[in-house]
Image 1 (tube, rainbow, N blue to C red):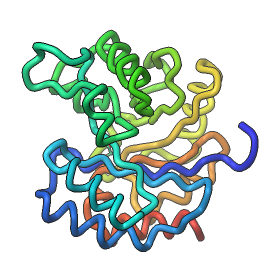
Image 2: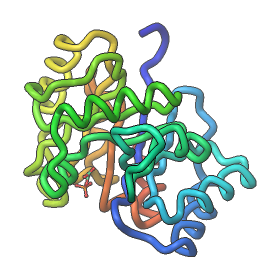
Image 3: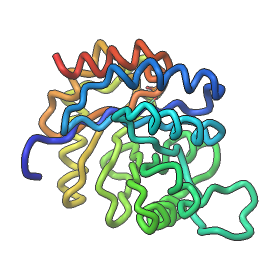
Image 4: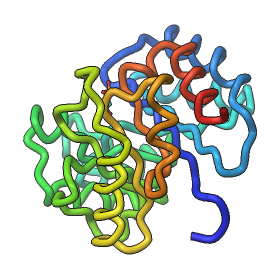
Length: 224
Ligand code: PGA
């Protein structure tokens, strides 16, 4: 990549926040995000508040990219309960795909993840594919990958920055032109360690993204 690497900070709210709580977060965090070219702040709310979050980001003109946490492996049609990329694109330009919680709790397979990435790309939605190790397949044309070891998610027990960097390097060697971010118990206290690694281009905090001040602290810790 030419120029300084991106710094992705992707908030994964998972199944949390009412619309009022989501809007409070946007109004608190939005004005405090520095408008730096290489900084990419993304928020991935539950589907139930995507529309309101998108509106609030536009009205406030905040440098926040709105993303989904998942999307359908199919296009529009008779797929009850699914959210196809070609409809979601009205609200999001980014989506997490293949999070380990979806693989574990909803039986998502590598084939489904492949299909979801194809749907996302066809609708100009940037897919962020989560992999659990350097051995997890990355679908073709996916340019952004999150390395998230299952044992580090929600446990307060993150991987070491050095090991995460080694895994990121392996993922980059196996998949040309991907950027790799790290997720799993990221906090304001440990984020700098990950972002200062050569092969890591950002982070995917879950729990620490929920509280607006915790999330601002993560952004600020990256600047220091
Ligand atoms: P955590 O979640 O930061 O709460 O560990 C990260 C994730 O699951 O994406």
